[in-house]
Amino acid sequence: MSPTDLYSATLSALTDARAQMLSPAWQAELDKLTADQRLTASKALLRVEQAILVLSNAALSDIAGAMQANEQGLTSATASLEDALKDITKVQDIIQTITTALNVVGKILPLL
Image (cartoon, rainbow, N blue to C red; front, side, top):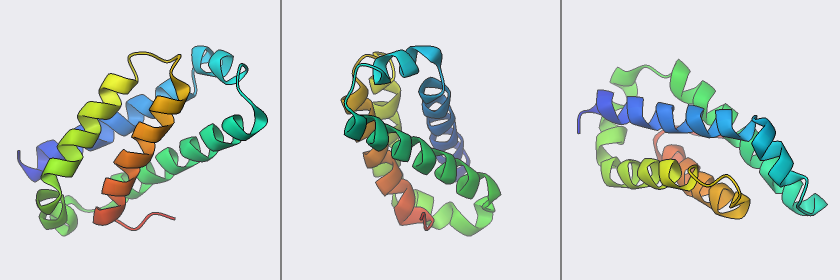
């Protein structure tokens, strides 16, 4: 996969996750969880937003090599994230999958 395709797929998966995490359905699922679980979900949303901003502001030419080096991880993480987002009722699975995807993105660009 080309760096451009990896970049697009990663950014698309993250923006899809952000959209789901801002939806009324997601909020309804969060209402069923404990305060600690809701806090974890909120922190995950902030990390997703940060990753989107960092990726969006990065010059692809500067990160192409790192993206290629992490191709397998990115491909796997984005596919897993897209799959996890299909069932919004599995909040914990989605958060875990987001964390895995963000860990791979963190190998390419520093995230806070």
